[in-house]
Image (cartoon, rainbow, N blue to C red; front, side, top):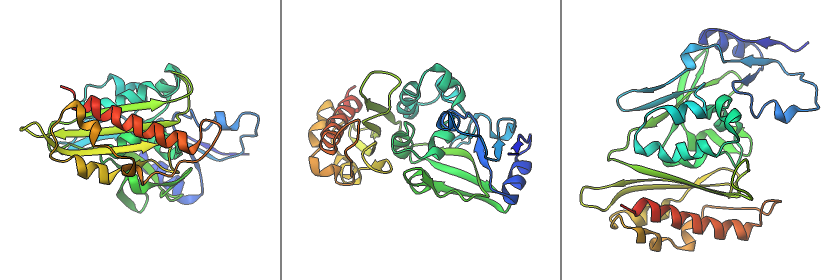
Length: 279
């Protein structure tokens, strides 16, 4: 018979993971729908009783989003403008029931190329906090998600939080998503962007990431570099060239062709910069 474990302490969860492979479940909004009509024959580690994985906290140099923080909790927590884009993404994740149960960390660990959290987490320079019975480590989100449904998490490890550093300047952010309909849809293209303006009204730093156009969401470093020093005005969009999207490698699938995705990504990036450049 499959085992079902629901420890109340983090150390007990880590000890269980060190003993045998377990499927970690929090909200379960991806786990259970993927197994409809199939026998549930996996050993499950349910982490929802672990208080140490709850809550959003200000650590001084950044914010810590525990592994059990749901999309709804993110939306309801007062946070600075750099989180506005991630909050927009939260409103795009399924329906309210999914937002109430699904976790941001679970969305990252699921490692879908269309994961709604990834563009803004990349643009926020976020990292994942990972623990095991042997110790803990922190890894940038960009290094944690290694491919389609693949991460750098070892079987004995548990992602305990997402860490978002505070930007050097007052930052604003945006999230845009293209799908076949307005709600309850897997994205064709997503863009997450964070802009840090200077006191002089120019771009001090920009971070832009595109999802659903590669096996993992990708930052656009050449574009980011080209924006530094430009006035923070709506015509920032005019700085975007097609070659800035070179890191992307979209594919043809049932939701759109590679060419359509690339053209759509260019349009969404321009729209994101128009919005970020507006007063």
